[in-house]
Image 1 (tube, rainbow, N blue to C red):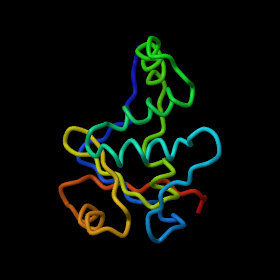
Image 2 (image 1 turned 120 degrees about the vertical axis):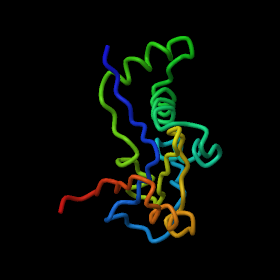
Image 3 (image 1 turned 90 degrees about the horizontal axis):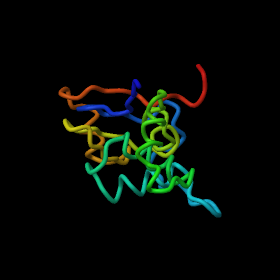
Length: 138
């Protein structure tokens, strides 16, 4: 079975051109279950450069769908048998003002748009630069 990946290496995903915030925001916690955005944020912020984007997206999927541990390997194979949106389409980069850096191993960290590290990464010529997807059509 063919598998797809959301992972990038040596890449910086900058916030969307139509991102509505000037400074990064923590995604709000809604009543009840956590949103995908808050799960992504908490996993990455607490563990910079520990997870790949595939790790993050499958974790969100398994939490939201309450997949039992015993079924995770089979479900992960099924999940990645179809193409999945990457961090260019994440609320973190589109709505909340966070850039996503993937290192040489494909492990990721997030940076506030107003931070010195974001500015440094956005000018780094050794990285591939991508923009998050716009929310509105032009």
